[in-house]
Length: 65
Ligand code: F3S
Image 1: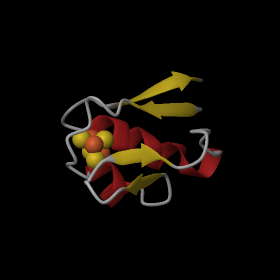
Image 2: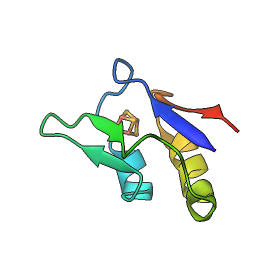
Image 3: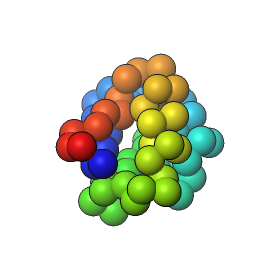
Image 4: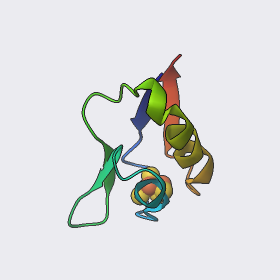
């Protein structure tokens, strides 16, 4: 599983970080980005799916199975 975050859609709600702090980082403006290259280890896939489902801006998506 690989995910990506669209910085133009992100409005800083930080739900992604609240649900999966190991997968996202928030900058000083509240903008989130995916840690590393977005490849999600099997043990983190459930958290990644939660983050995708809970972003109100639909800014996070799965880009590869
Ligand atoms: Fe941004 Fe959505 Fe996270 S708006 S901070 S990607 S919950």
